[in-house]
Length: 319
Image (cartoon, rainbow, N blue to C red; front, side, top):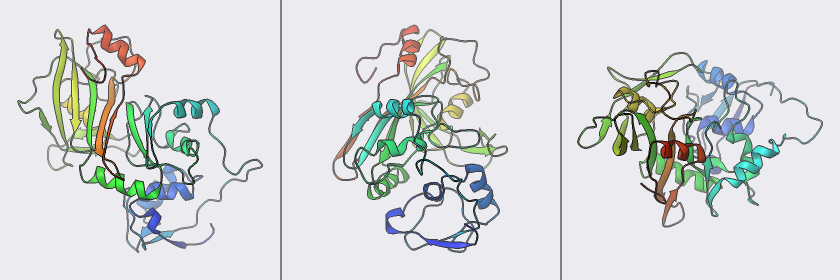
């Protein structure tokens, strides 16, 4: 692209985040370069400055500056993802219908690309079409180091409906975590601590805000404890802030085991598992067509080992 251009948002793309819309059209442009274009006001929405998370509306005009040309390819127009990754992610589908796909995301796999990330779920979505004409769409995110349920929309209409459910608080999310020690939780289990991001892009850290910040609320209950060493918590976020569960647990003095970023005070290795002990266990939400989606994702093998080491028994889909 060698000149400023304007693209009109179609009905099919209404409700999509600007950054996702951009990446679908210009996958060769890096996340860092897109952030720079937004920060300097070179990408605009109906003439105004906008952020990566701006929700598009049908008929809006997106201003695009000259962009780097896509590199020439001698083989297929789009490089296919590594076969092993593709086979693995297809085997992790736990629910599929004409509207929705739910997968069991493994820990260590980022949902979207970023600085220094070449392996991520977004690059695998073409392999999850299962005969559909449209590429599946991300409608929410899981932290790179968190395992568990992740929803995908199979087409634009489903994406708009699912994004509205998340935005309007119609999704009940439950996470399981192992934390250091035994928390003294409020009687109602409500952890309400506003959060703020600090630091440079790519090295940001989320902290509890002393003044201002974005509202963040988590419901927490202790399922079981192993003496005073560790506890199994059930966590239900009522808001969806970045690193919310990790920061809330750290803020009450009981960080999630294996959290190298927010758990520096965790006393020694409590289990042999070298990863964040956090798992997105269930999702309950209205199905975009009719009825209700009730999805449950079992603990992965490594976390099951950690639960077993502490003597915690998981019976079927729950404690």
